[in-house]
Length: 156
Image (cartoon, rainbow, N blue to C red; front, side, top):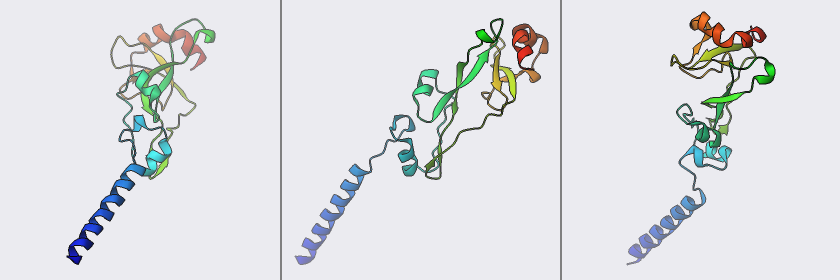
C-alpha cells in the first residue's frame, strides 16, 4: 500500500511539473507569430524561415523577413526613381540560439528583371537580387537599354 501511495504521489508531482513547464515555456511554433524573435531563437536554435514564397504583405509583417527594395526603370531622372518592394528575402534568423542574420548587400549596383519575359527591370545591389531574376549582364542588352537607358546613365 505504501508503495502504491508513493508511486501515485510521484506521478502527481511529475505531471504537475510537466504541466507547469509547458505553460510557462509556451512558445509559438511559427516564426511569423512570435512577438519576441530573440526569445524564439533561444527556444528554436538554428531556425531559419523561408521568406521567398511570401507575398509582400506577409513578408512585411513577418519578423524575420523583408522585401527586396529595388528601383524600377521608369521616369526621366533621379527624382522619379523610388524604391519599390519586390519579392521577399530572409533578413533575420536564428544562429545557434541568438537572433542574427542580415545578408550584406555590397554597394555595387546591378539591373535585373524577373525570369518572365514581360517582367520590368529594377536596380538592385548586385548581391541582393531575388533568386531566379536575370541580371542585365545575363540578358539581352538592347532590351535592357530600351527599358533602362536613362537610369543606367546614373548607375553604370
